[in-house]
Image 1 (spheres, helix red, strand yellow):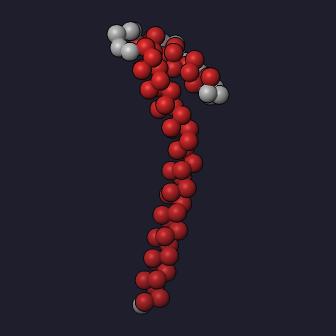
Image 2 (cartoon, rainbow, N blue to C red; image 1 turned 180 degrees about the vertical axis):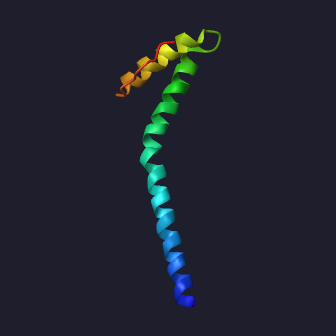
Length: 73
């Protein structure tokens, strides 16, 4: 019985490591995107139409090396 509990604990540890690896895989990209959004907001402030912020964010993300596709309505 103790052997089975140890095995489950090992499997839980492996599962946790895989989850953490998946989270860290996207961390750098996520931080860059959020940083770009903050930069746009801090630079422009409030009061513009949404399209102004969208265009500015596209430019900022492209500056960071992202490929950005804008869908028109």
